[in-house]
Image (tube, rainbow, N blue to C red; front, side):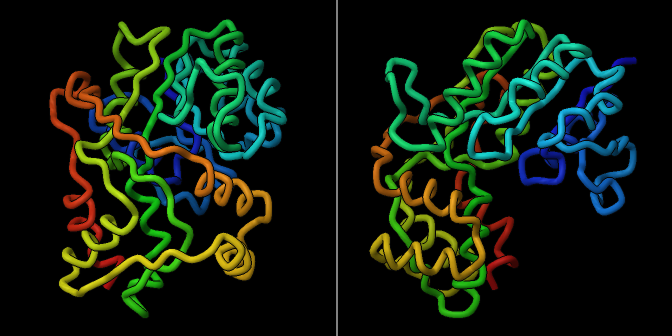
Length: 281
């Protein structure tokens, strides 16, 4: 039986995709740079490979007709070679993109959305049967605030436009349907949570979940830049994140796609915060 290959399998979304595929009885492979340290559930075949080195993917792809792709880089450099390797073995690809992509725009508002728009174009030209999941901000990103909340109960950083934050389990649930069901070829599913929230509202919700008052404090971009660089984040990533904070427009978009595809309504950010409260205590 053909196995589904999941990239980004040790990350927040990819790990959930692996778990859900296993729960459906689907044969699944997980791509990892270091299979020995992947710590994935029993039953998944962990295979070595690195998206930055397309030549390492051949063994992982052999026997896989379907691939879930999370692109972990800030440019499309090397993407064409990866897609060509996938196309030599697979027939279907599901790509995790961004709900901020605007097909009508010649250029996107920020580097991250531009990356996803460029990746979508490459995938559409790849000859593979494709599905794109345009996800809104994923709730697990809030884990980046954990240390600040534990130590000071104040999150200091650049503000970003409010958005309908989505639980990573909902992204994964839709991904599993797209990977295993017919009827998703050529579709671009826009995935959101059920409520538009600012960063301040997210931080407040986490505070309610842990039983302590927490707040968000906006800082100037230059201050945020200095802090993020001091924390050891790669300069290119810092600039991309700050560009998103500065230029990304507010979105009031809320879709019913999660419920339409999975049969269950999208989870709230409050439920995510309650599930992960111990991360912030």
